[in-house]
Length: 522
Image (cartoon, rainbow, N blue to C red):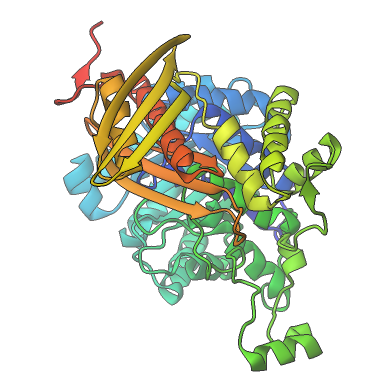
């Protein structure tokens, strides 16, 4: 039953969030995130856009099969093919929702859709009606609502309700709105549509002007009761509304909003770390709620105040978002149970085989260093567990680097389908030489778009974690690698990215070449 004082949260990290430049998640990674979102109490998870690719279809289908509490949502345009594909992918869902969208702003109707306003209204009626005939729960989004004529929006939403939609979404698609204006828009729509009891109004804000959280909170004041967004605000361009910010805004200012949620806020920080680690999108240290410095105090005056009373400079507690680390040091004498407990605290949910593999890697690491930090453990998971995709082609078997005066040589040994492939190359330093050798082995020369390496902690024996982004034939993929040897970490990251390129190419039916992209022959 609909609770007018409750805010429902719709997470689109796996769909809109994955549209962030350079992000490419496989099904196993998306399922890990989805399971943790369900544990956190997120009401709806948009798992993908089934008609967009076989990979998205498979992802929505898999998550629909695995989650039993949270509603699983699939996105679709109003086109019949899109709607039927989404409905098909959602068949295994215990609780499913079809999310249908169509643009309503003058600029989108004229230049993107090339449709008259009358044709758009007719398309909304047919698309939503078909969706409702296939799925009992249907959400309709008026894309670019914040730049649409309000009277036209009201007509569009009325038709959507008449056609069976029970959730009406008001997107600020390009982050154009400002809070006062967005409040008035939402209020006018709610009053103008005058939908039957039980219809939920929703918002989906983008952060192009840095106002996504403010706009989402303003919409709640107007009567909206579903907020759509992503973990860490991840998404295309400036990103989406960061759900952790909206959630803690409601909780911290309960006196003002007088609203409640179903979210376990103590899982916010671990889930944030999980999404960051898997996606490769780094959370800025000054990021609200979940940034590394969110509860850090360096100024002497602030430190004195916090020691006297934490509320002098802290409006929320680190414990409330789960960012207080457990008092536990993991090392070579730690057992499997303690290791598993720490993984669960960090937001990972591994099956028995994955746990065994991760624990063995952890033990090997502890032979090299006395203690393992949370960063070390997360690096192991990213490198050992999620780096292998079903379409993986290559694995690193061995490598050797010789550094001399003016010349560096690297020899790389990879395996593919059980066969060893070996080659060597020279380069400007050990990493460059190693990457040149790998290119010789795979017969491709992807462009290195980004290369980053960082220590997992501030200790001298920390692991090095490398992240690279490769591009070829218009396709991009990121790869991660971790090791106490930074050269090995760099090589593993490159090989991981190569494998992901093959995965992306397989999904898009593209053959990787050193020239332009070729479609794989039928």
